Length: 347
Image (tube, rainbow, N blue to C red; front, side):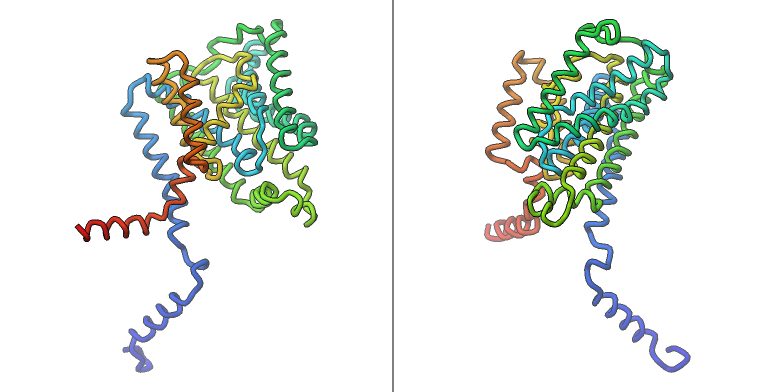
């Protein structure tokens, strides 16, 4: 009983009624908690995994982390913007070469070159995007392929600067990161930060416009959207993170070589995005795990491992066109549980 004679329970009841009458969009829903809990749980699992697996598996996980950033960055164009680029290896290779050549020619600090690598890649992506994005669809893909082949040939022929086909090998990574667990935790931290930043890009108004351009370019142009500049910004952002992935590659390989720039290298993140799910944010990350661990297992038993992965890609395209994660997100789990319960009760 309150001082004015009104029961306290009545007030509580009214508050509950008002709260329940609020629109669902104004109350924290399960989606919000899922968006927060998923990255926290996955990061915690990856940290624990680093302390329980062997050194060989830890090295593979380091490779996977770099590929996760590479594939997710490529999917900013592919899944979000509907742009198939065979030139992302240019920025991946430039990221690796920035670290390697900075050490070889100018004896620059690893930390300086590591964080400079994505900036250099983004700067190179500007003129490449300005030219390539003048073309559309197939011609855009061929334009990016041409840039990739040009970069590969330059790296292979300029022996005086890039060491040619031999590549650059050397102790340009600090001893603190050559320790497997420390190197792994550093790469994990960079990966988590990169994914969070790319997630913000995809969920921003810019990301919404980019997806709208993918769905209907002509309508967005009619609405006054500058399609060319939106795609160019996406291209540069993707180039930035591809360059970061290339710098991450150097940490566990301590090398850089022309094949990193080749257009065939650009096919790997596309493969990962397709098998994981281009329409999902974490699909390329799942694809990176499947690709790298699948590769490491296949090379033990067969020499033509590319044929096996090609067969896997064909099966996924035929039966799971949305990718593994994309198909799983479309499953109505509540209805599936109900049907399973009904099936159990019938027995």
